[in-house]
Image (cartoon, rainbow, N blue to C red; front, side, top):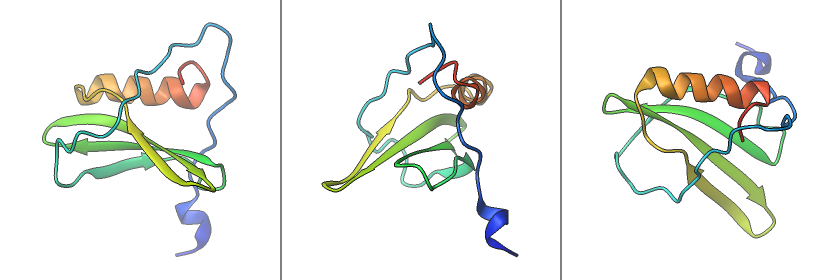
Length: 94
């Protein structure tokens, strides 16, 4: 296995009129989540599509000199979270 196997996609730049994701602090809804997809870790902000307990959400991590800031999208049905994930990658949501 090589490093290329772990490289995720880069989200496209935000488009005009994009949907705003209601980011909030993690609430500890689940002890663990399964990461189904992730963006490339080379950017200061990374995203992960997570699943736990039959629901999914997107985790956003912003790395700064002051430390990491982690936020989550609303938990929702997996098909809805997948649509939101696709919109995020296409630049239609942020």
